[in-house]
Amino acid sequence: MVTLLGVSLLSFLLVHLVPGDPVRIMLGDQATPQAVAHLRRSFGLDRPLPAQYLSYLGGLLHGNLGTSVRTGQPVRTEIGQRLPSTLVLGCTALAFAVTFGVIAGVVAATVRRRVVAALVNGAILLGMAMPTFCVGVLLILLFGSTLHMFPVIDDGSVRALVLPSVALALPAGTYLARLVKGGMLEVLGEDFVRTARAKGATETRVLFNHALRNAILPVVTVLGLQFGALLTGAAVIEIVFSRPGLGSYAVTAIQNRDFPEIQGTVMVVAALFVAINLLVDLLYPLIDPRSAGGGSDNP
Image (tube, rainbow, N blue to C red):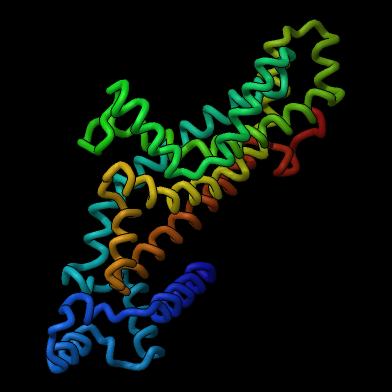
């Protein structure tokens, strides 16, 4: 609650520091001063900032995100129409990121062939270095325009979700791959792994039942942060692939200086971020019983 309160205050102050008058943008340069004053009064923009913030905060406590200056529609309704698309994109991208991160991390840590290890490590470094929009454009050129395997503009199909999800997942996936690789290299030198091998366990069982089970724990701890990063990164991807989600909605709101839309989007993303991290904290003891004080030091 304290976090959300801080976000509400910070977002409120920042949007009012941005140059530009949303009323002027909506009415145009030819609007009369009387029309501008009337519209500002109808949206409460003529009141002092402390009074505006207290009114905004009171609305938040009742689930009211305000009314869009641009469309005149409730911001809660507009966000509710776009949020499912962004959540689907974020969840799909997270699944791709975890899958790629685990596989690439395990391969980079265990494969002894220099060529394969070099290729995997190179892919991880390249994924970390490339901006998301560049990945999206390259995917469009290769798999959309050249190979015609996937649609490049959202048409509501599952196939149209593949390219934006992969583009959004690549930075998070490469970061998770580094975590898994580091965890695997550390765990493979532990006594319980050597004990498992001495008892005759197969290499596959050692890697997946013993090493990976412990090496993946750091990944779980950052999933909440990564999902939040995916939601914020969705703005660029939704514009590149013409997806009508929360990110493109926020960009349009910023361009039009629509204060209620901007603040509402920030608050919804912040609330999701807090909720997901809380869920990860609650699930972590189930994944690693040692964190609850009930396990032994050696798995």
